[in-house]
Image 1 (cartoon, rainbow, N blue to C red):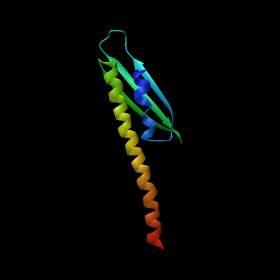
Image 2: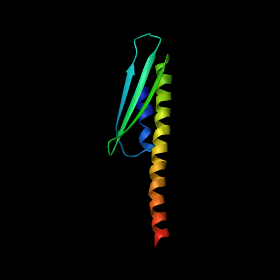
Image 3: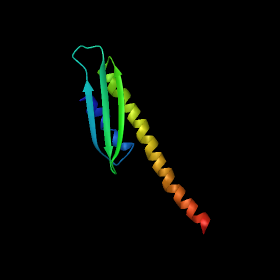
Image 4: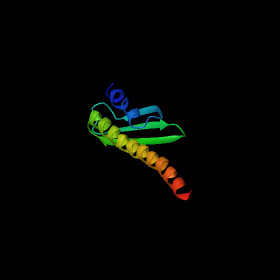
Length: 93
């Protein structure tokens, strides 16, 4: 439930996400839990956030934070590239 709630906000950072997969690996009461969140977007783009620690909730939060940063960076990169093309075109004519 916690993972669902946190990952449901990811599409606002990168709106072409079409699938999010959360993998939690750790034994009950164990010392280490690893969380891997995989976000798949259009055009075969894949974003992955991983975190390992003792608290599964904290690991989920940190992995989501890493993914948010990746998605924000990818979106701004795409936005910058889209605007650069138009500027170069007007300079040539």
